[in-house]
Image (cartoon, rainbow, N blue to C red; front, top):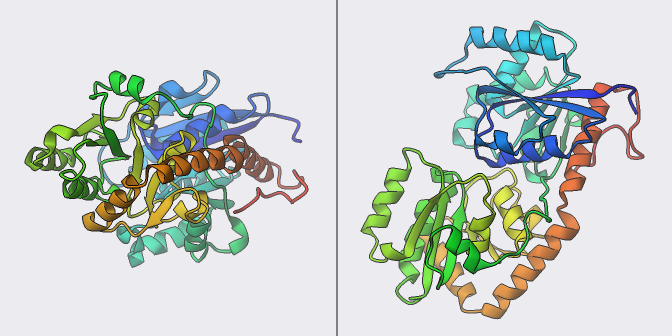
Length: 387
């Protein structure tokens, strides 16, 4: 073990609601405070997840405004890094990596651990974006992903495959556990009666709130007790969702709720969680829903097979269209016994295989290996266990 506390500096745009941000909270709060000092540098604003951080986690904001790379902001980051003097700079996704590399070019000796948290979308696959990653990865000591499938995708861009590994996300099964649907619906000001299917996720087209809403319209007539709960953030895309709800003949049974600091009531209010997302790194919503004992229907997106046991603990299917979604929801709703069995199996899988403690320890191992590269930190070597 090193003889001093290892200082970690996470670099993100903000700590607003998101799966990646949730993971950073879990890492920061889970690390042993006697062994690690944690700072979170937000290029823009702190965000609502700031309140979830333990008092010993220090958060900094740099107030970025507008698009494009700001050299003034880079200089402010360089000055902050000079003051913090971290043993590891942990950048998250491409934008913060750009700033992290630029700032450390003028302050040698700070190794970068870079995290990729989502499957590369179409705009990430342009020649320019792929070249950016290929060049920037050369300045990283290590690169990690959050799923084995994403690891395979990123490995070809890294200077050496030995520098890339995966640390699978984990879930706090004490915090996320089965609860009372009635109490949750009352808290969220929802009708207490009915069967609730729903989706929790950022309001972006890739999450497919729109497709799920259209699927609900296809099966709502034959299921008069069925209700739809959509959870997302307030943004420009919400106007489109509001329009579709207003046009639906079953609009009174469709409920939209904005993100809240504690998402647990959303899961407790549901009877069925449907995740048709087109792209994921490894979905925290899937992990949290499983820990809450919910039956899940998930798209064959990046990472889902790894946490659902290739479909043993949730239904996996192609959910590209509203019709495909409706068919799978209809099929599962017709089998209440299968729904109960799926929920039980999902909870057991979360408890046995998706522990938050294992995730935090893997990050701790990675930090130690980078901060003190000459030491061996476990029997498997100086790198954390990959998937």
